[in-house]
Image (cartoon, rainbow, N blue to C red; front, side):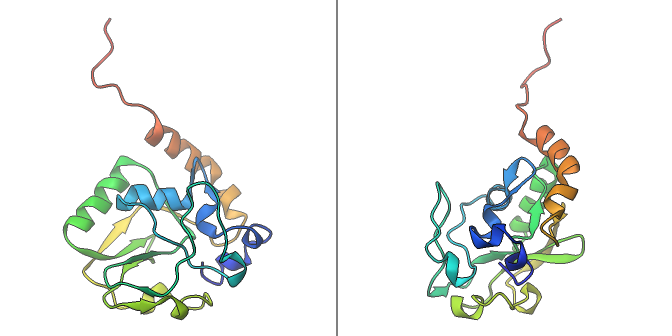
Length: 173
């Protein structure tokens, strides 16, 4: 969580921003679907170091290996097939940085990085050397806690389409 996410009161007192529901899905799960792998941890304030809930990953500790993807939990990627295709294309070309609406939403670390360099929330993803090319994704930025409500209609509409089961063939007449 960056400094802005840590100001998402009262939620920031009880959970990392990735564990907030944005539209029809948790922000963490949106990133997991987009990147195609489960989150290994989160980085937030010291008061959340022992956060544990259902399938949430633990707080990250130690050193993050080169190649680790760090996401900004204030970016809620769209669950749409087009966003998934954009991300898959970027990953197949060795993406090292993903942007959403022109802002850096995630980076793949070029070198190992100590969690202590991120734990105070002041580090900007733009400042990290990334490994690979840049990709772009669709989604929404949560700049203020109430943006979770402001974006709810377009998020839910997009999520309903993305999460609905698809029929393999046309219905019989």
